[in-house]
Image 1: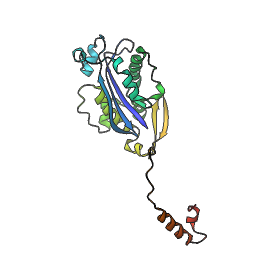
Image 2 (image 1 turned 90 degrees about the vertical axis):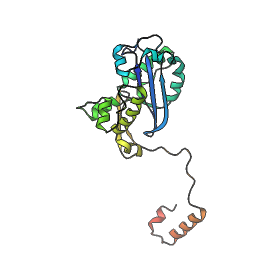
Image 3 (image 1 turned 180 degrees about the vertical axis):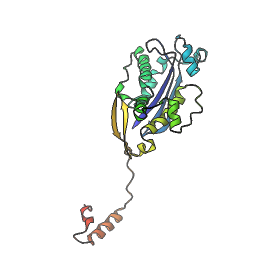
Image 4 (image 1 turned 120 degrees about the vertical axis):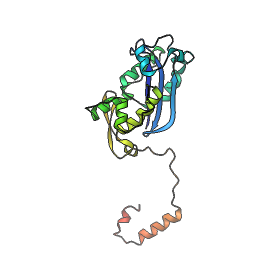
Length: 231
């Protein structure tokens, strides 16, 4: 199963007017990071950064002057997330901004049915909170000492670790338990599983091995249980 953990930093809180200025994505396959990422700082095309937002992420207009605009990155971004489930903390905020940017370019919006909200999972699992990303890192013993400011790629890396813990830890990747995932505003119960190999391994038994086994089973007698499985 392919999943993309993502985060955004923006010029402000208004999805209609404000713009994404940083977008970070981490690819997971069967709940393990693959090493593939998508990360860009983005020129907001003249939209100024609110002071409150800058205090959170520390990104300045001067640092974005030579960065690409979203329209130059959209096709690459859509290709990167193609076919994957998307994971975000307080997902409505991030997916709202992503869809606003895509909509300005005439791209189809990302369906909410593809999106998992880790904040919703955390609130159900830890109803007494707190459930901020920093609080969840502390709860699960995840080192977030590098997070002196919000940053889309770093926050995605931390969230990937938090997400795995929220749905049952590394065991979920080994298919050992059933987990609940908040997706599309509802809850999806899914049994963790390991996907089949794209190309099966070659058989390790030779024809001589198979013949020897058949001869052994034949010598066990008509009532031997092995006969039920010998084919």
